[in-house]
Every structure is written in C-alpha cells, then in structure tokens.
Length: 188
Image (cartoon, rainbow, N blue to C red; front, side, top):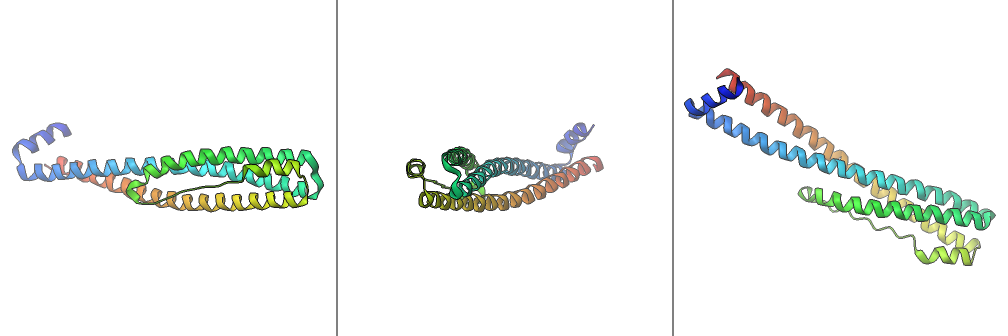
C-alpha cells in the first residue's frame, strides 16, 4: 500500500515527491554512514580483543619473570619466554587487526599505530646468561611492552566508544528519517 501511495505521490504531487526524494536520499546517506560506523566498531573490538590477549600473556610473562628473578631457574625462564612468544603472536594479530581498523577509520582521520618489540636477542641471552641481571633486563622489557599494550588498548577503547556513540546517533537519525518518510507517504 505504501509503495502504491509513493508511486501516486511521485506522479501527481511534484512538491511532495521532491520532499520524499530528499528524505530518501538522506536516508540512504545515513544508512551508509551507519554501516561504515558499524564496521569500524566491529574492527575496533577485534583490535581490543587481540590487545587483551597480548596483555594477558605479557602479564603472565611478568609473573613468571618475577619468579625467575627469585631463583625459578630454567623452567621459569622457559615458561616466561613461551608467554613472551604467545604475547608476540597476539601483538602480531593486534597489528593485523589494527591495519584493518585504520582502513575503517580513514573517514574519522585518526592515526592508530602500534609497535611493540620485546627483543629477540634477549631470549637467547636470558637462557645463555641465566642470571639476575639478564632476568631484570627482560623483566623491564616485559613491563614496558605491557604498558604499551595497555595504553594502546585504552586509546582504542576510547575511539571505539566514540564510534559507538556516533553509530547510535546515526541509527537514531536513520529511524527518524524512516518515520518521517513513512508519515509523509501515509498522510498524502
């Protein structure tokens, strides 16, 4: 019925048809905007998930590092470095997700870059020179990396929160445009 009324409006009421077309155009633009915002939010959440995994692994490595410094020996060193490797893997995933997120944010004009390096030579040195000084150096690198991951995660969370707010506004505007368009057709 609405489609038939819309056809009649377009044929018999040019002023009303122009207003209807303007509403339809705005609705299409807002729908595209909401879609882009939704994709950016989903992409940002993927980055946060990967950074959460990296932070968890780094926190575990930090705990094992503390144990290692207190005399944990080779087993503690091995577990600590396994956690570091897992954190590197999670950081690599976060960097991939971040590249996708950056593409989604081009309209927002934000730059979100992350580079976290724990240092590959430290793994070898920590095993080879397993002692308090090397453990302390590795522990410092773990803490620095954890701070970087945590800081970047909070930055991404703030951006995603802003995007979610914009998405909500866009969806609200889209619903209002649809109601207005339907009312225009129904009242004709």
